[in-house]
Image 1: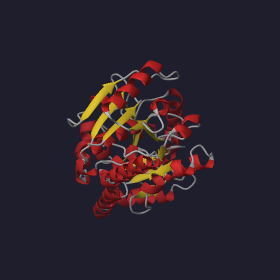
Image 2: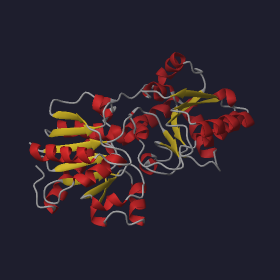
Image 3: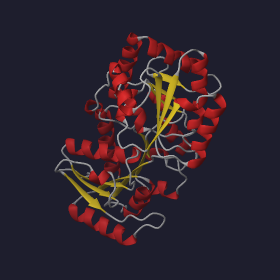
Image 4: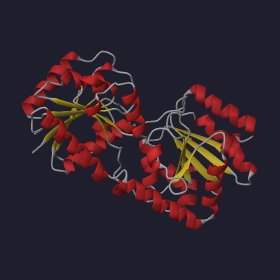
Length: 367
């Protein structure tokens, strides 16, 4: 039985942690034994995994890595007979680069963010989850070309039901949202990078076209960007059309209540909520950064957001809410994309092929 060690350093259920959990489940489903090392009380360690998965809380460290943990984890993996370590998260990537032993322990790291770190050159392979991310690493020569691999994030679409557009009204009432408004949802920390305030003028633009809309912002609220959203909303006369929900452990009710997911981020890599929206049958409106370039087929699965020209997005949304057939067409298109480009089988095949490649290059069988 092949043995793979996964290291995750994120505490909460963000995209990197969700991808670590997806990979762990996928490896187990392919008949492999997995050791998952994670921080104590981390979200990923609290998930229900198959019996072939062992979870191990470990003090990874933050700025300073825990040297004793590096020694004990390396010894445990070698004694277990594992040869491949795959890390998710900045601290986990640094930790794994220190675990690596040429000829004994192979280190694979997923670059969930574009960060200037010297440790990238210490891994046997680095995975970029979007072409946008891969291009940045190539531009800065942070990873040797033959060690950089593009594997899009995935979501087990079969485990997510397409949310019937006809259920939106009931979901909105249950969440205390206006039942008849065009409803847009944003998911993520309210912060400078996510740039939620850029979406506010879209509400005013839709109002001018005779279509009232509600913007639902799901996520932890950082003061500066939250105040920017409120100030812009007051200026444009749409303050009553914005709802802040704070952090939510389950975003699917909000996706189900929405007509579309919107992201106005200045920077993204491979947002998992994009995939959750597509799998749920909801179109995506997003700035052309990160995996939105793979997730958006204009007119089919969504539209790119351009704050200088809101016409295409407004036109798509108005057509969507006023035509049930158009809603169903786009729901089918988004679901199809989630199952193909971002499908779980392709995701796992690509990872296993990469493990084979780096094991062969190091003179091991990876088992």
